[in-house]
Image (cartoon, rainbow, N blue to C red; front, side, top):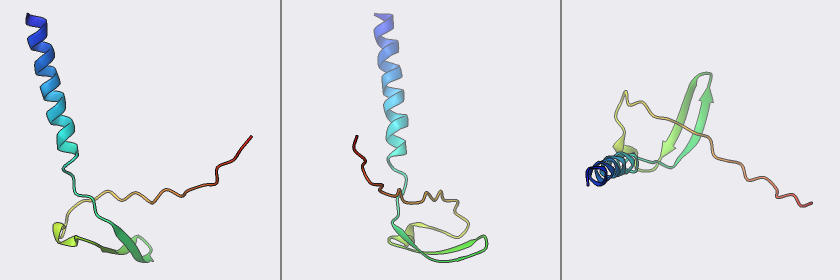
Length: 69
């Protein structure tokens, strides 16, 4: 009985932690200019950002050709 309660509690905590990751804002942006270490971008829904916000930018994945045998 005790093991079932502990397992249920761990599952609940895990689900709350992973659900929090889904709430992070995702923006679609296009790069307008690059000047040294400054990048100018135009983003849809940019009203979610404030001055000084730290964001993580990942470049788009390039779709490569699928090679056969």
